Amino acid sequence: MYPDDAGFCPVDGNQLTSATLAPAASDQVDARLGKLVCGRYEVRRVIADGGMGRVYEALDTADRKNTALKILHPDVAVDPIAVERFRREFAVSAQLPHEHIVEVLDFQPTEDGSYVLAMEFLYGEELRNTLKRERVLPPERVIRMLSQLALGLDAAHARKLVHRDLKPDNVFLCQTRDGDIVKILDFGSVKDKAETAKKLTVIGTTIGSPYYMAPEQAQGLETLDHRADVWALAAICYECVTSKVPFGGNTGPAILVAILSQEPSPPSAAGGGQKYAVSPGLDEVMVRAFKKNPAARIPSAGALADAVGNAYGLEGSHREWAKTAEVVLGTQIASRASRTEHAPAGASGAGARRAGMAGSVELGDPFAQAPGSGLQMAPALGQPISDSDYERVLPKRTGGVLVVAVVAGVLLSAGVVLLLVLL
Image 1 (cartoon, helix red, strand yellow):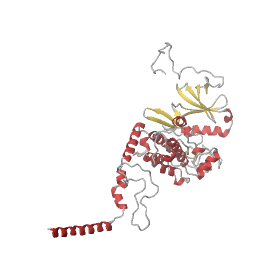
Image 2: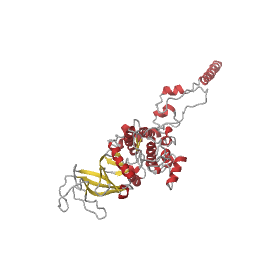
Image 3: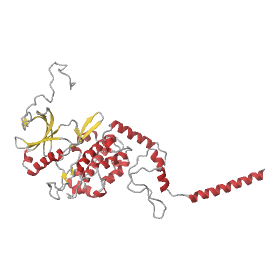
Image 4: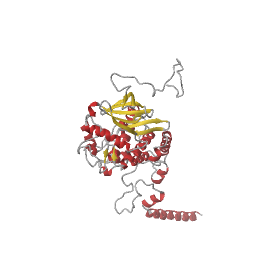
């Protein structure tokens, strides 16, 4: 409420104290408030409550900085599997020092018989709260967010770690002047695909949030790998642009049946009438991202972020977009959309691409013909197509040109004869 350098209240003249350093008030409902945990962390306030534990804001009296403390609920703290998962969340997160993954600092038993995980304190809000308020997000914000999530996830996947519980609740947005800085939360459900990893999940057990589960995860298959996170990331993207989850249902089993047996509505249709237009190019991206067979799915989080950016006409890759200011991305998207709208009617091929037509990555070959048609295969999917490429794949219509030339010659001869007769 006051400038950082303010020493006294301008209204009553009382001396101002940093909220971080001010003594915390005790609370009869929660005995931890105002107390020192593990001889180091002064608990200041409750931030959130979850099924596993409660999250507090605390002051680290050793480092003199704000810290987030996640402390297990008493009934969870007596479950050895839950405690081991909590311990592994610390161990796994400690292996992933990444700017887009929340930093973990400490893990200890508490004096009251529970366990505490200390993490960096983040200023901002979970994506879930943002969506509750905004319903949908502009494409530039979605693309920047996906790009940062892809960087963090691909780093985890490189270590054979699958998050398994990606959802808006576990995506934290720290707002800055240039846009969100994204942090991935909660690696407590992580699946370690390394051969030496300790297994905590019984085969056939389903872990994760139903709305964002891949089919192989819904079935509890042991073959689950990083492509389950790609599916979840696509589901988050879908919800951000349409305000709807791709697979709905009133119960957990109904949602899982939809995931296993249905296809979602195209996002351009599901997001119709929303505040921000959904690019039709995103439809094909979601088709590929929601393939039931992981082998046919978009192979990585980075590839998904690239495909979404390309669907909105952006050039480059997610590594660049993750650091580009939202306003710049928005300008680029609007510019490409404007060029598309002003492209000549019926434009196709290289001319339409030069006019700025933002298209999706096509699964089928647009030049495919029946055998013997004389057409050659188009260039590899996702590669730019030059004018020479179009010349190579389009058939030569030499017969038609010859007929036109003959007809023109006859008419010209007749005209010359008629002119001589008149003279």
